[in-house]
Image (cartoon, rainbow, N blue to C red; front, side, top):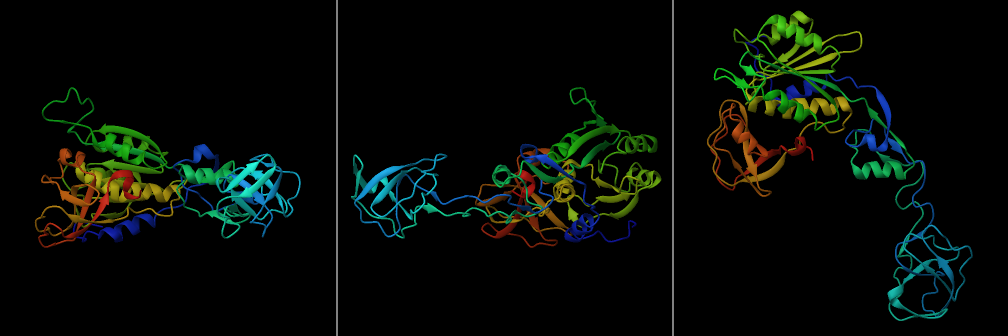
Amino acid sequence: MNAKTPPLPLEKAQARLLALISPLPIERVDAPSALGRYLAEPLAARRTQPAHDLSAMDGYAVAPGDLAGPWRVIGESAAGHPFGGAVKPGEAVRISTGAFIPLGAGAVVLQEDLARDGDHLRLTGEAPSPEAKHIRPLGMDFAQGSQIMAAGTRIGPAQMAIGVASGHHFLPVRRKPRVAIIDSGDELASDCENCPPHQIPASNGIMLAALAAQEPCEVSRIGPVADSMGALLSAFAEAEDADLIVTSGGASVGDHDLVRPALEQWGAKIDFWRIAIKPGKPLLVATRERPRGMQLILGLPGNPVSSHVTAFLFMLPLLRAMAGAALCLPRPVQSVLAAPVSPGGARREFLRAQWDGARVTAMQLQDSGALSSLALSNALIDRAAHAAPSVAGEAVSIFLLENGGVA
């Protein structure tokens, strides 16, 4: 691709990027270690839950159809300690929540609807209707052999719990992607407390590493790297073991933008370059064949907001796909504008904004070098190319920045 090739539309570029993914190997880890990762295979239950009819309330278990009483109390069924006998009409067993329904019982009458005098029990309130209302039947939650989670499911606390409850101490996940973040540019100072006027602190690398850490991966940082072919080639060699290399800066067409030629000299093949969005047009995607498998390179713009937006739209979906996620792309949310927005430009725009849960307000400062407005934003307003002026109350699509836009 050359500078005359039209920039790719966002969705086409995202699809093209995700099509490059080869699944990473599957490993089985204990349930706590799987937290935040993605299930690599469908998970089937190894047991049935509940494994027996259970009481959902505290009360007394009685025979089916025997709901008028009176009854004689013949024993107790507690959670973990089932009653060993059987219930006949005219008999009742004291039962607690989670306890086995005794043999012969078909209803649980709530304790607050009963009066007990010694072993004598009578109804003072309402009988359950239907009579099995307070019974959790065998297999209500899941049955042995049934699928409890699909491949690609993100494993949160509840998913981890059902994995263990269904009999799985170990869960199948993809190996964590190894990610190398490379900051490049002579203008970058590694010491933010001693930064001369002609330089700026190297903040993109730490920002991108923090974004990547929202997904299951192993992140390393390299740089800042000088604007020289030798320095870039050395940095790429240092990232030899990475599944994904993410560069920040140097991917455009200026005299000092050397990432593309350095990648080509290193043996990488440029797949596409430039996307039709603002901020973030000079995004680069390349691949490099290695004996151990293909390496992906994502070249992000150097302007901090452009770098953040393209990482949100491309790096995070890429990491999710590498980790085995079923849903990789950020999901739009519908909102309404709290204030007017000026006409759009020639490219699709992503405006930094503040969302209060009901309405969204575009930040006044939208320069791609302005970290201050990015730090105050929790959303991006998605605006089509050549968008007409928008008025307060107009419906808009937004992407929420928290948790990579997929929470």
